[in-house]
Length: 74
Image (cartoon, rainbow, N blue to C red):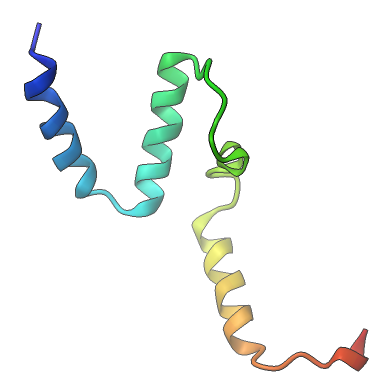
């Protein structure tokens, strides 16, 4: 069995090579492995991965394209 002091830096380094989406997916996987018996500090994390990246990109572009909001339009 490897020493935890040797593994932790390797894990941290490997995670540093992942993008944000991959890190969130990894967190989801880790939580599944440990049973996620502890409540999440941020309740929104339970929705991680529920929106596809392509959809998020479309939302981001829509927000950029709508530079002004007409309050009378509602």
